[in-house]
Structure formats: structure tokens, C-alpha cells
Amino acid sequence: MPTLFEHIFQHHIFQQVVAILSEFSTALTLLIALLLDKNLGEAKRFHYLVGFGWLANKLAVTLNSLSSENISKISALKTKLLGTIAWCFLVIPLPVFYFLFIENLTWYWQIAADATVLYLALGLNSLHQHALQIYRPLKSGDLITARRFTGYIVSRETTALSEQEMSRATVESMLENGHDSVIASLVYYLIGGAPLVIVHRFANTLDAMWGYKNSRFINFGYASARLDDLLGFISGKCCTVLYAIQGLQQRKFTQAIHNAYSQGNQYKSHNGGWVMAAGATVMSRKLGGSAQYHGKVIHSPVLGSGSEVTNEDIPASLTLVSRASLLLLAIVFIFQLIIYLQ
Image (tube, rainbow, N blue to C red; front, side):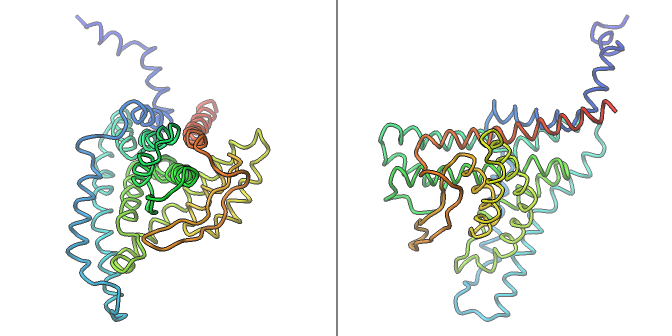
């Protein structure tokens, strides 16, 4: 005699629901991943980036033994080649393995596997945590604590930063990392599935580890920096549009796109400049300016337009990133709904 579950699974209504869900598998995957990130946050144990970072450090110590100071062009070229080989060794194998593995799964197990990979790549919840642990002490006037936590998310020196400078640094980090750790992963899932998400996440991590223009990494990290810029080009433009769309009600969409192009192209990071300029314009705020990195004062062009950033703009920047991810999810759902109804 069939069990209750067997009756349910065999019922034509259940089968119709399953068939409909399969038609919306992409939107469903994005939704599950975003919900997992919101409710679980960053994985505390067994996160694949922990092992990846450990291996990347080991390879850098082993292969990157030459300083760029006073070395020949041949040695510099050799170091760049070693850095490129190391990048390929670290980035390529797992996505290829995953691609071969996922082909053998049914569609619902593919959703489960893809949503898990995408969740592990997302950092929206983490952005909220990092931003709020700066915002709260700033709100209460505890600049010492705020400077310490600001140092967790930026590479500039934070020991003498004012409240306004910390607010600016945090908003800049939220808008830029909103692309790197949220929108880019969602966009690349839409383009190439979970394997491309892994490629981008690994490449972005290596850029954060090796992409410095100092004597140790300017040659070894050359490929990492360039490939991360390349991979972020498409997703950066998508993120720019998703930020800019939120300015439609205030008639700032066109201005946000214009500032992204005119100001972002002058910024040290092309992709970062575009998304920060667009986001700041929608928020009616100005970013950029002078900051001290490793003992050197770096002057950045103004990004956005409006008044100076205050600490109240920190939660506003988080809202902008969250809405961008939900907006992308809505676009995907509507697109799949149109296809389903045809």
C-alpha cells in the first residue's frame, strides 16, 4: 500500500508544481543563496576560501622569492610567468571538477549544489556585520574602536582618521565590495553557472592577496591583478546599472551613469571607480579624496556628487547594495516568467 508521501509525490498537482519550479531554477537558485547568506552569514568552519588562502600563501612563499628591486627584465618576466602559472593552478581545477560533477545531477540537486556554492561566495551578510561594527562606535563617539574596525576593511592607515574619513572609507568599501562579493557572484552565476562563480571568487581573493604594487608582488601578482580587473569588467558595469536604477525616482539615473564613466575611469581601480561613482551619485554624496596607504598619501578623484559623507550614510550604502541584489533577482524572475508564459 503506498505511503502518504508516495501519494503526494505521485499526485498530478505536485508534479505540476515541480515542473513549474524547474522552469524557474535560476531565480530559485539565486533566492536560496541570498536567503542562506542572510540567515546563516559567512560560514564559520570549513569555508573553502580558508584552505584556498593557505595554499595561495604557500605558493607565494615558494615561487615568489625575488624582490622587484634591482632585478633584470628576464627575472621580472620569469616572476610574472610563475605568478600566472600559480594563478592557473589555484583557480582552474575546482571549477572544472565541479562542472564535470554537476552534469550528472538532476535539476533539483543541481539547484541545491549551485545555491550552496553561490551562498559560500556571497558576502552581503558579512558586509552588514563589518559596516555596523564601525557605524555603532562612530554613532556613540568611540573613535578608537571605530578606527580599529575600519582597519579590518580598508588597506589605508586608520590610526589618525577622523569620524568623517572613517565614514567615507566605510561607504567606499561597502559600495565597492557590494560588487566584488555580492553582485559579481550573482552576475557570473547567470553567465556561466557555479563554475564561473568559483573562478571569479578565487580570482578576486588572489587579487586581494597578490595584487599589490609593492616590491614583493608587482611582478608575481601581475596576472592576478589584471585577470581580476578583466573578470570584474562585465559585472562592474552590471552593478553600476543596478545602483543607478535606484536613482530613477530622484532622476539621478543618467547622472549616475555619466559620473561612473567620467569619474570612474580616472580612479585607480576601473571597476571600483564605476560602481562607487554610481552609488555615491544616487546617495547624493561625494567619495574619493586623499588617504594614506603604507606611508604614502594617495590622491583619488572625486566620485559622485553632493555633500560630504556622514556616519548615517553607512547603513544607507548597505541598503543600496541589498536593493541591487534584490533588483537583479526580480529581473531574472520576470525574464523567466516571460519565457514560461510564451
